[in-house]
Length: 243
Image 1 (cartoon, helix red, strand yellow):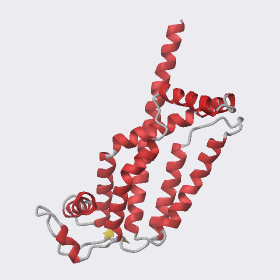
Image 2 (image 1 turned 45 degrees about the horizontal axis):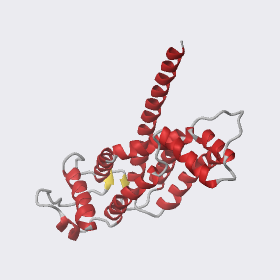
Image 3 (image 1 turned 90 degrees about the vertical axis):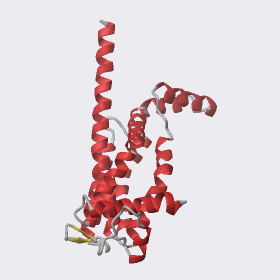
């Protein structure tokens, strides 16, 4: 089932893009495939990212609930669930999204890491043209079958930018809560893990990582703006009502 419903479709999509839109450049094909995957998962990513932003903004209220009900775990849990319900937030959305996309990530890893031996082309669908040879480079500059320090560095930098973009702005004069401290630490933890994971892997995987992080940055900026606009409208509406 994994081969039939995940690996084969992704492999065929990659070769199809290689033959058509990517001008027989594997790097461009990976970029296009990554964008297609992110567009397909956009509603889920949007929901998850929005929940993460709202959860960050609810931290002061959550901290107050934990303080007020520190001796009664049941009341604390109920108050937190009521707060999530009031703001239409699902605290488990990030975990659920990871579970959904994990099989896709594993399939992509196998596609990129497994190489492109002639036997693999037997998996192509009848309407996908079998390439005579595969140009496994990005614009003829980076060999995607081998590790690349440049690709690892770019992916790590983009991971850092993604973390900075997702971080909620806080008052510099106000002490940080424990979740806020952890969020700041994750900004640096992500790039370090990116370097450790990608250093010995084919740069095709690093390219996928780079593009998906860049897509996340753009999406994060868009979601931040939409949430800020909605909050401004609510504030203006509340002012008009009071007046």
